[in-house]
Structures are given as structure tokens and as C-alpha cells.
Image (cartoon, rainbow, N blue to C red; front, side):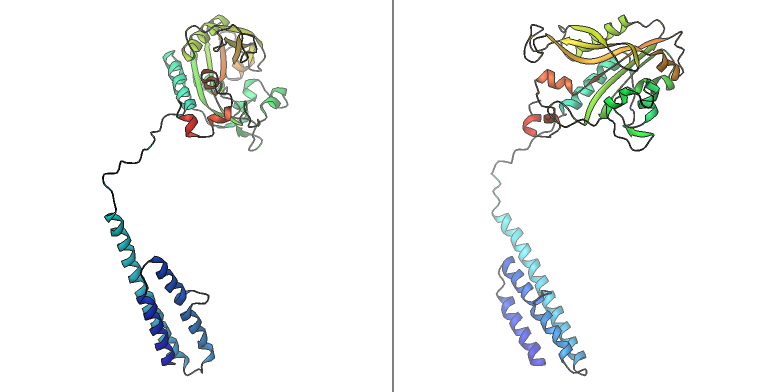
Length: 338
């Protein structure tokens, strides 16, 4: 028994002396200590074959051998690791130019969102930071879209339960503002909204919006038109033209679709605007009296307007981005162009 253990120790000493690098170190470690097929592990299994009176002595001797092997291998590992570090330092070329690294910048959508918020603040608006997980009441019911209203189907909403959902628009700022403030009110909100849309070149299940509401005495559609012109000229350029077409939205009456003159052909007609010279940009209208009443506003005294726009559409138009997915792919080759 003692001769057998001495033989194992001799074999290890010979192999240990031959260790010159990490590869040979791993080979020796696995040869002696591997759980399956390791020399010491296999030797320990012989314990069951010995007479009971010999087992304690043999077991203690094998444990001492294992401890000695593990200690020597650990010390050799530390030496090899230190040698690798110091060896690498000897080959360090301090005259070599540094590796280039990229500087980050604001995403085009987030940059545009910040620009829009600044424009609205300069126009006297108060910004609301509203939750993306919204109550059905604020997202639909208080905006004149009760249960079973057909406009709800157009939103195709992500519901958590019967009362909570991922907001489908930022128009809920209308209700939050009217509940929290008293007229005159100028409130706006920007952020992410969610709908069950396919993810393709022109649609995304998550996109950004800006929504605005103004409530005061004597507010007319002329006020809305004038404010929209000022806003759109600052977002695009001062020569932009605007027109209003009849449109329907449950929370406004009358409602309007707002077009701008094509920024690519200046209204002359091109493939982008389908030769019409106009591009639809947002929806707007006068606040529905029912929406005012549900939020505690006296509709016999106050009137107002509201409008909303998809922020993602603006960089697509301004920079000629044909596929909305490029804005969400995080491809630096695309984003560094901005």
C-alpha cells in the first residue's frame, strides 16, 4: 500500500517537473485530479477493495497526497500566471498609436423629442411626464371612447387586465391636465406609445408621440391653426406651408387632418408625396364638449383644441429615412450619420 502511494507521488513529481506552460499544467491537473479517470480519484476508489483495518491508513495517506498535489499545482499556477503578465509587459510597445474609439451622441428620435419639448416650453406649455402603463379611463373612456367604441379597434391595444394597458397615444395628457389644472391650460406630453402594429418599414409596435391641449375662454380653430403653423415652421423650416382637411377623432369636434407642403419637392409633386405636393403630418381638432365635461371643465364657458403627432415620422421626412426599423436597430453605421 505504501509502495503504491510512493509510486503515485513519484509519477506526479516527474510530471510536475515537466510543467512549462498553462497547457501542460492543465494536462497534469486533469491527469491526477480529474473526477473521471484522474489517477488519485481512481486510487481512492480502491478503498472499498481493502480490508476494513487497512482502509483508515490508506484513506489518510491518499488524502495527504491529494492535498500535496493540489497545493503544488496551485503554487505553480500562480507562478505561470505571473510569468505571463510580466512576459506580456516586456512586449508592450508604448510607441504604438492608441486604438480609436467612437464618441456617442443623442439618438435622432430623442434629440428631436428634446427639440420639440423646448419649442413647446418656449410657447408657454407645461410638460407632463405621464405613465406608459395607463388606466383605460384616461386612455379611452374620458376621451369619448367608451367600451365597444369602434375607435378602440383601430388602436389594437396591449392590455394587462380590464382596467390597465400600455398607452396607445399621449392624448391622455388632455384628461390629466384638465383634472390637475384650471383654465387657462397649455399642456403637452411626449413619449413612447404602444399598439399591435406589425414591425415593418412603416409601422412599429412602439413609437413616439407628442400631444398638446389648450383650454381657455374664446379659443377658436383659428388659434389652433396659428399655433400649428408656428410649431411646424420651427420643426421643419420657415417656408413650410400647411393645410387642414376634415378628419374624425372621437375626442375632438370638428376634427382635422393636417398636411404640410412636401419638403422634398416644395409642393411641386414627387414620388414621396405621390405627386400631390402635400404630406400628412398630424391630427388635430377642437376639444369635444363631452371630453371637457367629463374632466370637470365648463363647456359653456371654455373651449379648446388638441393635436397629436408621431415623432418618428419627422426624422423619416427630414432625413429621408425610408424604413422606420433603422431607427430602432442601434446600427452605429446608420446612427453616426446624425
